[in-house]
Length: 501
Image 1: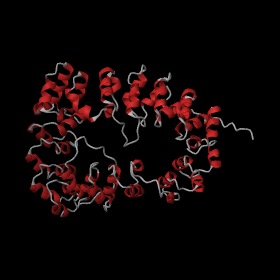
Image 2: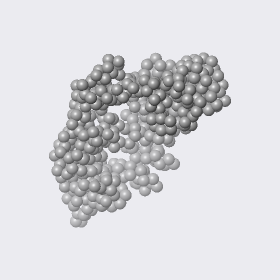
Image 3: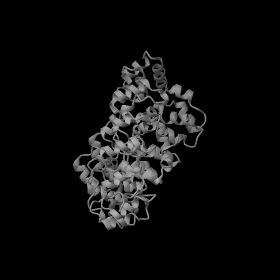
Image 4: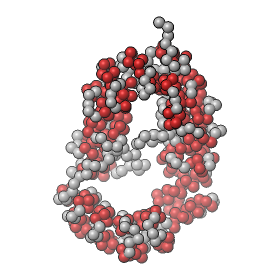
């Protein structure tokens, strides 16, 4: 079976023109339905996967006889989950598998959750092999919280995985569950909380299991002593340094360890004593000083005495909102701190109140500004544009998808040396036709593609681009494409048959 990439690579020029029509925002619903009925697979793929669809078109896709066509809707990141979930009982395994796997979305975008009743139906009726991958991302937070006590046994099996956050009563119920598989899973989770069992199960070689046990599970004194006396892996001490069950005397010991990575980990512990904090505040290693400078027990005066360097090589990206919001008082304290890394932590908070949004939007630290722009739903337009111009790291393009990203005043960037900034001119309605035409010949392919879709593109140039192997489908997606051209392409199957002079 050909992959989507191969389907597109094999599409000829007429097919690519029709695929452009499938994305054209000005074509009527009747055109989309005709493409769905008559066009080649590559066109149906683009139509069903790469745009928002009217309900009438969704109805037609659900009833379409071709399995691949229906499967493209199952993975459409633009479709409402309530539309996609209409395929939940599709007769074909491939369609159900694609629905469970979910849409392919560029980071940081994530698919919206499926309706709870649909997710429960899938868990209850689908084979386990269909529910791997990214299905868990399509489960709502509310359903995840209810899973450990759900009346359906298959759903409760999923809920056991949240063992660490479950109440004692819920754990007890799962340990006594009438379903043997659930009882077994609960017992396996429970034994991970038994230090003696952890000691007995600890592998004597570096591996994922050993890493998990040393990082997260309760450790006996014997395990701690064995790590201190004989390293099995080079990072053993650094791993136990973050373990919450580490004995206080070992915390003191590791605060003076010769390995700076161990000291960095110890510096982040909330149970670090005052003497150890004072010692690490003047540590010769800059990473250790930076780590301890963020310790919650320090006040602003103590932080100011530490010689730390703020890293500027971090990625300033989108962070999904946690299911449990942070304490607003802690967020405010971080936002008002003199420490840029604490202000960066506050800037990631999706619920930051307006006065702190205004304050951090003018912060002198690039990371604070960009993190606020990437994460807050009310980030102002001026901040979004400034962040896009100044930040060139991962997820830069996400800034242009934020609700308040400006569309006016961008034509001035048409000659910018950065092609991603030049492409902004193709988003502006005021960009002159001659400039748009010039940008269709830009050295950068993304700039050329964006300009080919601009409605101010002169009609002669737009017509010429329909014969361009690279840009034909972008030109056909241009909202300014004349209706007679649209109908001619439909009539000829995408071929450029010219009307008689």
